[in-house]
Length: 215
Image (tube, rainbow, N blue to C red; front, top):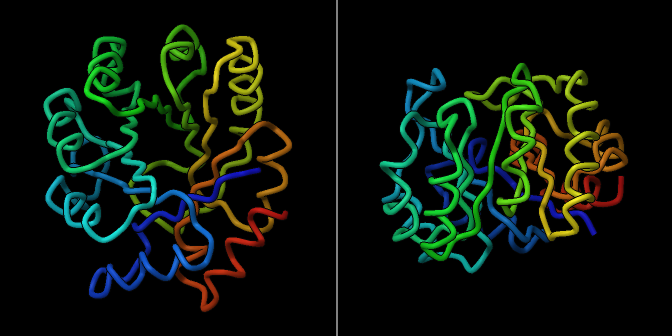
């Protein structure tokens, strides 16, 4: 069964606790937390303090996506804050293996992500070492962007590589995911769908999550 991970990037931060409870009641199993530094991406979002407070309010699996430079400097802070999984970008850490190992040794699951324009080959060798592979289907930084279909071959290649490892490795896709493309990405191997605007900008969170799971 596919996992839907609502991204709080599109949530109403004036009532974040209520938003988290609402998507939990609507059937979400994971919560996707986009961490942006204004350097790797042209936006600034949240840090470990917010994650720590989210952890106090929910038992959902906290999926922290670090879209930041020098992620190695912040791993310990996010582990301490209560992250269940920490994903770093290959573009910010070409020598990602030591960081991946540190995340896992700290008790978290570890993920590796690439942007739409980044070749799949840059992460091929690291895949057996991670718990999750994240293929970005928009250019990271802002919610509400249109899905980039050209990433599908990369998603399929990642799925094939994961299958060869014979390990439990999640394949996540993030960016412009909605009821119109959920079936396409699932058919090509995605088993964790991150959705921001499609869920939080709608009136019925339960319906949106169900549409993604059943597409």
